[in-house]
Length: 319
Image 1 (cartoon, rainbow, N blue to C red):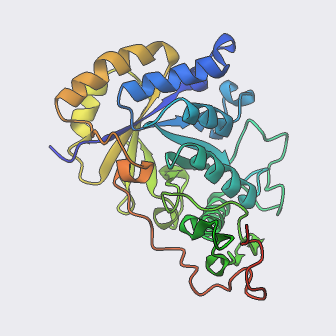
Image 2 (image 1 turned 45 degrees about the vertical axis):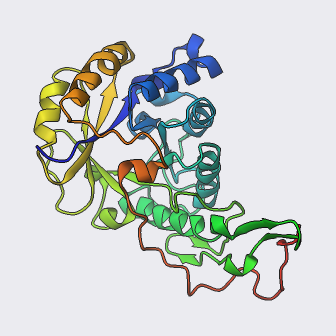
Image 3 (image 1 turned 60 degrees about the vertical axis):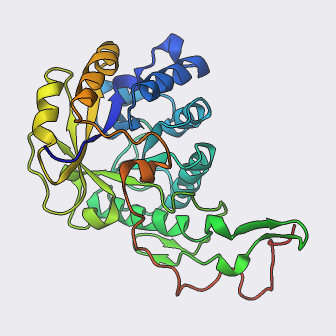
């Protein structure tokens, strides 16, 4: 047997009926997943797939913010595309949710968001086609922005009257499909960077370096590069699939796409049985990166980028 698998869960239609789409319903679903030892909840993955479920729905970052307030261990992976959202807006929104969750948020980077398309078939900001290269450019931009204002530069020195060491705040200087100077106006994550997921079948050659996890559909070939998570789209025979998947050296986790009616059976019976056979990992504390055993990527390295406030001694850093 290989290393025990992390387990993510997607629930079709968010798992929320019309009557459950309030705070209590969202908190209740997140609490059930946390109590079952699920590593992370992927919110809104279906928005990247053309189907009836994605016609409308709550924004995944909103659900994640509510879930963060009512859980303490569950990872929260927000599905979002650089479609109508500029990478700057994505970077700011995702890291803001991560602050609310104390380092438990990740990003599933979609190529296209059918729920917010509004007949826009290209990038609203640049006019670029919504393809693999465009998404990888967006990931590079977002990750650079997350590093422009390191969290540990916020010193909060009341005696000296200094809020942040602005000498450590650097420009993003992104020049690909986007031209972004930066910096972000929100400090970075306690995780260093939020973990990023990509769908392997839609990813290009740069996907392994642009994302922390590649999602592979069960039965598809496993890529030679990258950290792989296998998605199971049926609640049938999960036990047998886990036994098979855990033996693969390139696979670190599974992602279960569940119908709401299957959720109770899986979290109360299937997952406990799999955990008793040591098929599933059990890292109950720490940031999402720590729970998944993911090191912070080396790139992008902003140390040679100009500081954002180099012309002024300490603007904005004074309390």
